[in-house]
Image 1 (cartoon, rainbow, N blue to C red):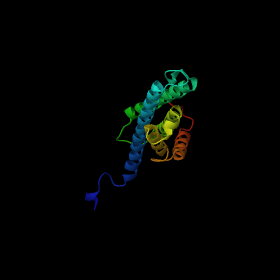
Image 2: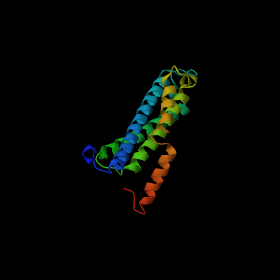
Image 3: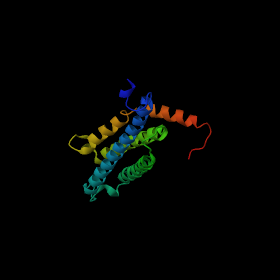
Image 4: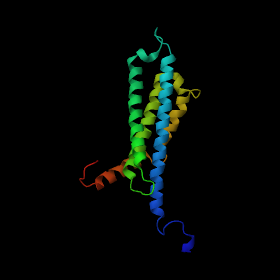
Length: 169
């Protein structure tokens, strides 16, 4: 009977779509956390590891590249996430473009940062005794869970097409 219905009749689809948007934001936040920890581990290792007569790895250009690119991507993902989450109205739906976008970007970013952390740490980064090996696996899962990267591409392309010539904000 209608007296036992939670919410509005036929309102479940809107509720489900809103929950998917919230889930994607939460997964993007997980990705940002993974990237942050990977970056912390990478910086700590590079600071403490002597090599080729130098007291640490920061004097090597490739290590500098891995760390600085990781930092820039982490900050971009964090900014996208915080900006979108701050403006998200949990009482509505229709935020799919950026819910998909933030999850797509942050999941890929986290995997890239974790991959660079493994690279900086060399063989140590690959073994299970070090945190970055698990962080990479967790980041890879984020590209699949909550919608694959390919599904986010499809959804975003559809939503961008619907703009029908209107400019992005």
